[in-house]
Length: 350
Ligand SMILES: Nc1nc2c(ncn2[C@@H]2O[C@H](COP(=O)(O)OP(=O)(O)OP(=O)(O)O)[C@@H](O)[C@H]2O)c(=O)[nH]1
Ligand SMILES: [Mg+2]
Image (cartoon, rainbow, N blue to C red):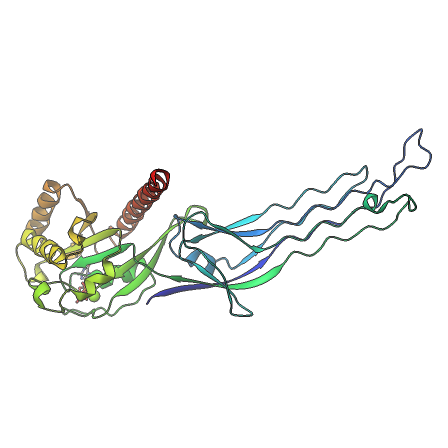
């Protein structure tokens, strides 16, 4: 099981202090108490979102503090409340108290909210202490401190994107270019024996999209009957949203008919029996630095006929990699939104 983890430290806002004041008005010689209460400190709230799929954003940004409440003022003015801080996490995130190790919360669906650190209450102003026998109280309270906690977040990673194709086409090289995964890469088939997951983040901190890519072993003709490494590993991409299908268009691939290559892979996917062949797919012509023009032309023609998007990359020179990364992010985002809409529709009709 692949697990993403992050540790965060949070500090909710302190409450504002209560105020001590007395009314001073022209015709009221001895004004009563008028100190207002302090405002409550901001909470730190965690909220599950469809937009995030990993915890990478916390690794760069592990500390969060909410605003304090303002102090109370004279004329019974209550201090303004501190603003809340909302931290977005993917569905599936489990929150553990880092000190006790106990589970504090688990996000099982989108748009759940959990307050992970409560803001301090504002202190009472002296106006609150007035009684019939105690008409000029000087008591007033300080605001209470906001809660401070350290949490460990854990998320079981499910891949959004599966890399498929023949052995040796450059799947592991691609994942190593776009994520921090460092799988073994070598110039022979079946270098990859176990799936590798890589986390890819695209965009800046405010508008970041992250997704998980699974690099799996290569498929060959007859894989569903056990040829090569078989197809059992395809279960790792059963729940992905998108497949990225790499086709080696260099001379060195040892195969001449790229159209047949693609059909063989689609056939093996279909034989697996989980409708993998029906998943949205992006085609990629790989090793474009050593391209065989005829193979590329044939693949372009095929992709056009099947209305599949085709990107050309070289994982060695880096050509086309950024473009492909953004295209995958876009597609993943679109598919996630469609799923979220679908879930809302279901809830409405159900
Ligand atoms: N010239 C060139 N070589 C590449 C490119 N991408 C990968 N290679 C080489 O192709 C070989 C296979 O790359 P891998 O990334 O291991 O291929 P794979 O698809 O993961 O292979 P399996 O794990 O065996 O299925 C390695 O020698 C890479 O250096 C590329 O864009 N251009
Ligand atoms: Mg590999």
